Amino acid sequence: MEYNKEKLQLFFLKVEGQHEKINKSVKDIYDACAKPEEKEVVLELIYTLDKYVTEHFKDEEFLAEITGFPKLDFLKKDHEYFRAVYYRLRYHYNYYDENAKDYKYVCMFAIHLAKTLEEWLKFHLKTLDKELVKYLQEKIFED
Image (cartoon, rainbow, N blue to C red):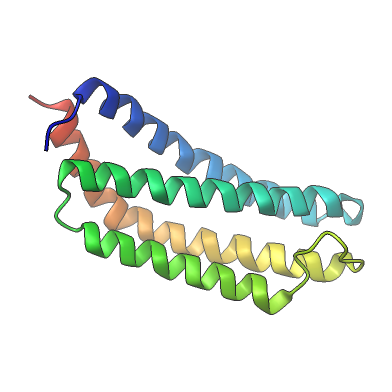
């Protein structure tokens, strides 16, 4: 498959930067949940985290697909697994809507989500993402 290496290099750097944004969002959720007056901030952080994760998975899968990453199917399945867990959490707490009056339940969801993402990312980054990064560095940075 033909592709422009310079554009892929920039795209790769964008994807790597998304990891930092996701990790920061997780930390921000923990911090906001420590303050009961921050309910609206927590809800906004959840929406932001949802956007980051959705965008990141799509971008990562695009890079893997366009460069022929041999474990693309595993990567997609891993991402799909996390999405399924995320949606189950969101459904379970059912306090995701903006009309939630009880901050305690909003924070239960937010902390559960943040902890789940934090643990899943630790594993994902050390396994498939590590392999993908190595593969991409060889494929798009080396001649």
